[in-house]
Amino acid sequence: MNRCLQPTGFTLVEILIVVVILGILAMIVVPQYGDAATEAREATLISDLRMMQRQIDRYKVDHKGRSPHFASTGMQDYANFAARLTGKTDITGALAATGTYGPYLPELPDNPFISNSKLASLVKVGKGAVSPRDGTTGWFFEAISQKIMPNSKTGALADFPAPASTRH
Image 1 (tube, rainbow, N blue to C red):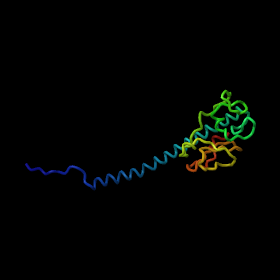
Image 2 (cartoon, one colour):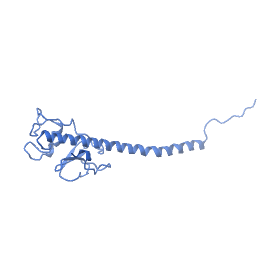
Image 3 (cartoon, helix red, strand yellow):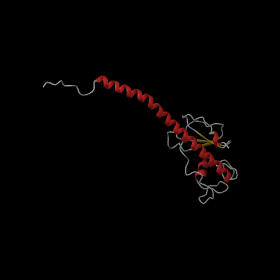
Image 4 (cartoon, helix red, strand yellow):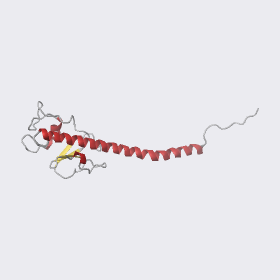
């Protein structure tokens, strides 16, 4: 009995065809995952903006209309803005471990578009119609309008002043 041996395995052409097909599928699928990641970061950013603005508004209600960027003396005190939101205060806004009000936030959230984790949760307080978009902090609190904004150089919402739903 003489049997012909049939080759077992794949030819180079068959392997190349499979690789090309996988490459085409990767070109279709990978950009969609990139867009999904950006959309997720934008959704997180909007959610954090809403939450922070609500807590700033709540602080103002508890402190007779005074924003967290004011000291108990009535003078502007940008340095303790975050501490007033994450700590306890009395009715005047003075930081006090035994204060009646707060904390309004356990901690300031990170801006998902800031890659430096040390800067992502910091807030810059200042006067200006829009965020400076300099990326030196995660957030910008505009003292006149009393709105919180992202302060990132990148991201579709980098120049987004504040979500419309945070305006009351």
